Image 1 (cartoon, rainbow over the protein chains, first blue to last red):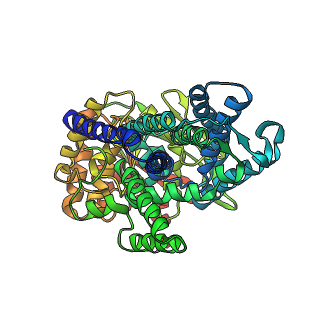
Image 2 (cartoon, rainbow over the protein chains, first blue to last red):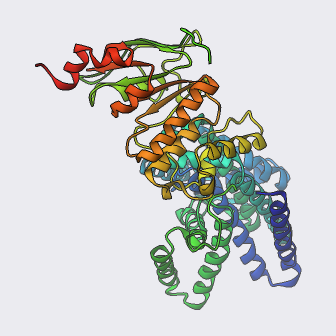
Image 3 (cartoon, rainbow over the protein chains, first blue to last red):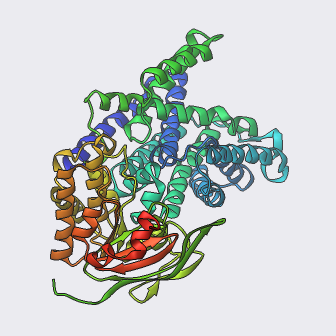
Amino acid sequence: MSTRDNWRNLGFLAGWVVLLLFVPPTFSIYIRSFFMFLMMYVILSLSWNIISGYTGYISFGHVVFYGIGTYATAILVVDYGWHWIMAVAASGLVGAIFAILIGYPVLRLKGPYFAIAMLGAAEGTRVIAINWVSLTHGADGIAYPNIENSFETYIAMLVLMVIAVIVAYWVGHSRFGIRLNAIREDEIAAESLGVNTTFYKMAALVLSAIFPAMAGGIQGYKTLYIEPESEFFILITIYMKLFAMFGGKGTVIGPVLGAFILYSVQEYTWIRFPTAHLITFGIFIILVARFMPRGLIGFAVDRGWARKGMVH
Amino acid sequence: MAETNEIALQVKDLKKHFGGIKAVDGCSFDLPKGKISGLIGPNGSGKTTIFNLMTGVLGADSGEVVYRGENIVNLRPYQVFNKGISRTFQITRIYREMTVFENMLSASSMRVPESEAREQAEKLMEFVTLTPLRGEYGGNLSYGQQKLLEFARALMTDPEIILLDEPAAGVNRTLLQNLLAHIHHLQEEEGKTILIIEHDMNVIMNHCEKIFVMDYGVKIAEGLPDEIQNNEYVIEAYFGHK
């Protein structure tokens, strides 16, 4: 990627940021909330893409980092009186530490075993959140003081999304990312060609845990109430995976496009067909999987509309 | 390159059993430095297992692989690679959904600046005539081109020892001559130590200075091509008893 390409892409990102900055003063609370969720799913999809798209370790339990982040932020703010921004930053650290702790055993597994282990980690953590009442307040959940915070949380999510996009861009255009791809393609060959696969897989998992944890912290603070069933909801993992795969996993722009388009379609079908929106959404996904199995970016590459590879 | 009798690497009494199968059962040999050597033997004689043990892909039950005075057996593959021993595989293991250029760059050392790694990748792609295909997915290359790519990728860190597992298999004559010319260039101009596993006896007899023969997990003979061709144990291993 040339310096010129980097500046062009940075300009493109800056343009989007400016447009998104106009949302809070211009549109209704509903639209603001829609864009906030949309940015959150961009962050989650980009993060899932680092461990699953680039490295090939398909995670079925990535919501665990999101849930841990919502709880870490809520506990630090409500029970320990931290400023919410400090608590969100600390949630990123908590997510990273948690990734190291579960990464050590689960990254020894491959394919469906890793996927199921991650699903188990998420479900197990949800059960712990329900039962460790002294820390998490159990099934009652944690309520924040009732304040109006939609503007500052919107800006925080926007800033976090910009950082996540920049980090994803760096991963996607660096030798670090190429080495993650090499692990995805053939782990034995990668290791035989100088890649310390244990280190790189752990680095990918940690990187893919930090942003969901922080996004969860912001989202929890925005909704002012969290409880285990919502924060460890498996549908959040399914969404981040779907959005990344729809756009094109293993690419930078894929998860961003996927989240923008698919989350909008999901919202539209929910408004238009409230009783059948999941069916409509499901049909859409089946059609995409049938005709664009490698996502939008793969579709474009196959037709020569986009260049092959990440690094040129 | 000057003639030397130096040893690049020693394999000492190496053993690897898979249950009741003795894949490698006390194999020893000294790999001469700066020369092209061959490792031959019937199917299942333990040649690829020896490569896997030398490069850390498999752990050994016992024995040593001594390189620069250090026993490197049971190190992890990336550690062996970083010490200067590179390899290719019997069935190519190129990254199919990565471009030729990305395949090359993936094997560069992170200690080398990216600009230098890119330059090295371009130079090696030129060396194996893959530059026109630099933006193509590895999986879209012909088998022979994949062999060339794997060979070039193994050279990214300028290794001292190169282990080639059946480089001629599935490669057409023209590409094979091209590959052999590259191998000779590396040995003659850059003093690399090369060990080739190969079933094509023309390649082994015409291009290797020293040959090791394995059967049932042990070395049964070693010597110059003429000596190996007339060795009764080798003839027996390949053709059976008279």
